[in-house]
Length: 262
Ligand code: SF4
Image (cartoon, rainbow, N blue to C red; front, side, top):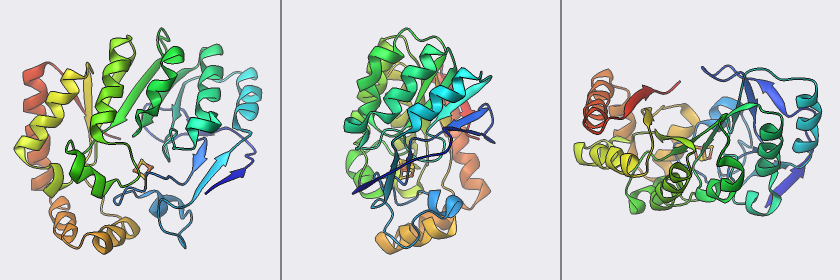
């Protein structure tokens, strides 16, 4: 059930590196990833199961237009808190309306999503020099990902969307995050992630480990008790260094840049 709400402003100042502004058409996220730490950071809907509460800011494009008309300098990050391509976006087209405005006002734009719905907007994204699109896949195996990310489109669908965007000339990258030790931390899974990124035509891979924040950790262990060991492993600097080295080797072999996330 998506609740329709109104926002007072579309853009907020971003504290993320490389982004000046944040634009989030939705609060909450139907993708319901077990490891998601949005509730830890925002305190949103703590009394409800994660994935069940989504708010759509139905007037966001109207607000954005007024803000862009006043002049906005810098890079606008779309989907800095929750995914801009919610399932409801297929019908509501809030992200799409905002992207059309950002393109019209020539605003540099960086999109991050875990949904292949982004490929719907190829007509806007193709030929737009000021946009980049990151697609998140932290675990390349569809079956394992369906446990960790129960409401999200499969990794196969996400890689297919990346390939479509790259083929159309859009500046794309893979957000290889989070790497979950038991699901995607093996050498073969890391190699598979980078291979499929390469085959999808991206120029770079950004990566991040698992952030064991309290609400997210509790959710993970409640859903899959064996993930407790993953959380302990992910706290280790040695594990993180090993993952980074393996990704770096794989990216190096394929001529891709590896970037540390945020
Ligand atoms: S897609 Fe992103 S915002 Fe949505 S639940 Fe997953 S990690 Fe959280």
